Image (cartoon, rainbow, N blue to C red; front, side, top):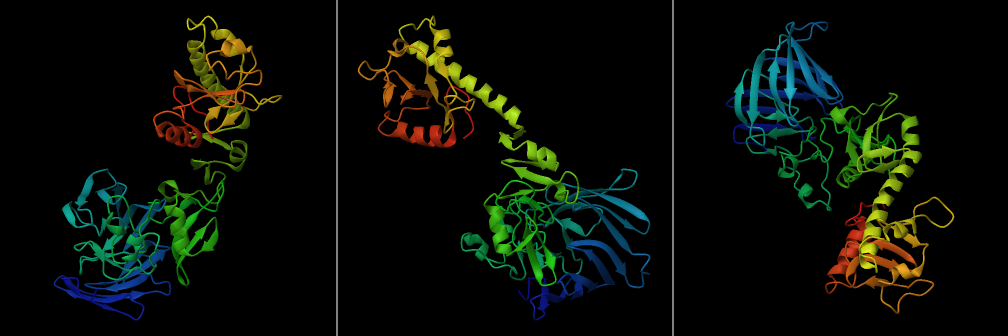
Amino acid sequence: MTNDGSNTLTYDAEGRAILSSGSGGSGSYFYDGHGVRGKKTASVTTVYIFSGGKDIAEYDSGAAPSAPSREFIYAGGRLIMNVAGGTANYFHQDRLSNRMLTNASGGITAQRGHFPFGEVWYETGTTKWKFTTYERDTESANDYAIARYHVNRLGRFSSSDPLAGWIGDPQSLNRYTYTQNDPINSTDPLGQRRNLPCSDPDMHCAGGGGGDGLGLFYLGFGGGGPQCTADGVDMPCGMGAGLLRSGAGSQCPNNDCGVGTATPYRCIGDVCGYMSNEYAATHANSWDGALYSDDEWKEFKNDLADSQRQALTDAISNASNSPDGSNWDYIYQNLDPYKPGTDDLNITGGNVDFRWTGAGGYLNFVSADAWTSNGCTLCRYGGMDAIHFNNGLFHLDTASPVWGLGRGLIMHVLVDLMLGNINPSVPIGR
């Protein structure tokens, strides 16, 4: 784009904007060897000092090396403070942008809101950090997005994404859109494809690498331009983006992955958090957002198995010759959840399979010709679909496979065998 409706834009041979001229003023832009903007000349000339993708200091014309015009302080990758002329201001953010500035006394010095693609909605006070992590240039009113410029008035970038799109995600083939037109849920801190599901400013994520333990995903700038790593190994950024899209990455809170600390951020199963190597090695079992040691896991599974055992006892007792419950204790005592000769639960899908160790007479609710001394190969009580008896083993089902012209089969396969959801008992993990 050479004209965004308000500015005429000029680019160098590498596709970087070097001149902007419009009704708001003119600007010239200069870049370092990594493609990061190191100097801007507009109403004043400003030299930028970057650390990675973060602006940490700025020098206006004539400023001494020991006295930067502005300094910026970050915590976990988020801008929290700037110091200019000896005065400190503190930034307060939501998940997208800075919303408020306060002074050292806690007084509000600025507030702002913006429309989805960054146009100002309301604003009091002044700051150039108006939309996500972008610096808004006063001369053009466009946002500097590291790899290129975002035209917030148009909701798109002025030049194409340096990263190619991916055919598996057709929306990414449009290399001018901002976050594939999803600015509420995604950000693009470096102007190189949207940040999803990792939404922190520098795209540090845990996961990837194909296994549990410490994993990091980082998208930044190296000597050759954009670079990506997963678990500390360099990889093509397209592959890295695929890791994030597939759910193999998990965001490090506040962009702090704890690298080099005693408790780095890591994922075990579906549980992610800060944990030591010792804790991770001894808590390898995950369930519903919690981690368990081997002993805790055994106790936890036994508790869940007992819930299924009680529910199955209720069903068998109700369907037997003693629906008044007089045989409940006997049935409960003779439903064995363990594999023969072990203390390991006998689990299929999400079900505990119970072996019957009592007399067959208590099971005469199944069809009369099905019961044998060896059990039946596949028996279901017609009035009690939740009881499944197969090869001498019982468990509960959400539905019978022979019910409802195939509907029961679908529910049984998808819910009981694949997802491990049992009704009315509590499910065991697969």
